[in-house]
Image (cartoon, rainbow, N blue to C red; front, side, top):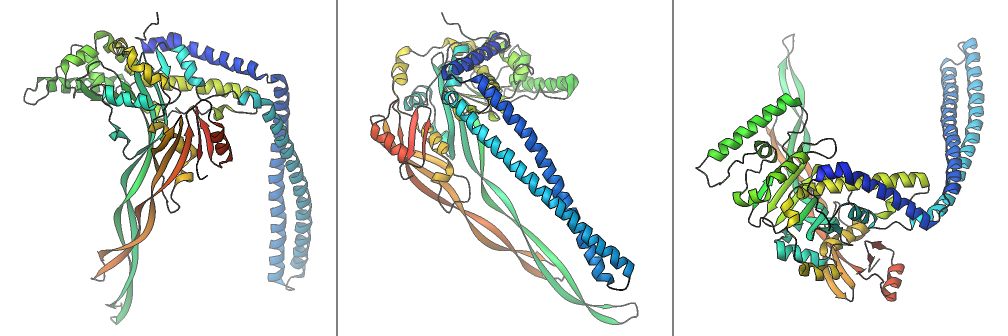
Length: 573
């Protein structure tokens, strides 16, 4: 029987971390054996490349030195020439020294020029040999580089953590289930474009990691200036009146709207447990710096605030402080609206595990997560996840150096596992979430059907790149939004619309009072951002083996990509 994960921090520290590392090492060795790469030959070639690089670095340093000496020689000759021109025949001795300096500078510069050219040829030869040998090294590693796949890391995680499973890609049925069974609202995607999505289940309950681009209106301050002048009559020290011209630079500012783009990551999770409960919490800051004394002061202040809030009977809140004050202080979900279901969810075991997770700063990431529960939907945002790479693009593993490829493969996957695991850890800390198993029949059709969701379509369009889709007049980033135009037998045409903004130069005037006693209109140049959009067709195949016609069109297109079991191409590319 497959066990649940109830102690996420301890299980990671004592079991999962080393198990995943061992599986990753074994996987790379398995890929090496399958590829039949000659590791010894690659290491010999890499050693030669490194030796050539050392020689190239030495030649590059000598080239720089000769360049400086060359410049110094000709500079000395130039200075001597200037001295000669300035003194003329007035000082024969100095004139002779100047001529000697010119000759010496030119001769020295000529020698340095010759050496500079020689070492430049030597450096070019080294660089040519390096590139040639690297090309051979790439050929040696090609069989291994071809074996990396999008789901490699996901499969390693599935083999490590019980009841964790990932989808090949985010299907429309998985998204529909989040909407239908758990109340997910697509309004989240307004003014956002999905850059990457990774969905899956924890014991049958769906989750999705999302990396998205968001646009919000911000403000930018523009500055303008105007020179003014005027005349004034004043009396000088001799008692005479004279006309004096005064000058002043007037400055003015104006604030105008500007589109601001930012990237974020989140975790969405659906579960039937505590279906009427809503709450939110933010990182407490109690695991930060400042020492135990100041931490205890902050904890005491927060606890007193919770006690006062619990005793207040004048508002509509039914908040009741639980006996575990340590948990209440750290988790601080004071806006919860259903005390019975909150206690059902956060049993003493759940409270203990959540505290361990929040208070640890050595194994995991500590209290760095926001947690919002909206009935059956849970949203988690972690600082470490926001900085993490959740895109498992296999091209990043490709390398010409076997040992460096092995080291990067191990390091990247271990970091990916830690980042993803501790993003899920707050959910794993709650036993009821794993005890609530979705009925098997609900997921039978979901896992069997292959239609991809619009999250995946947006991610695929962004994988091709904004530049391909953007309007020619666009000067900002673009939000790529998609709509299925046609779909038949696993092959679809997707309309990709790039929403961006063009910039129009504007000028406005702000009235400023000058020292001349008058008001002046100061011009301010600013940019008005006006919306532009452009729609292009993206064709994709969700079948494991696309039709021959689709493959031919994809091969003929200048913009085609294979990503996460989806082959796509730009229809007019």
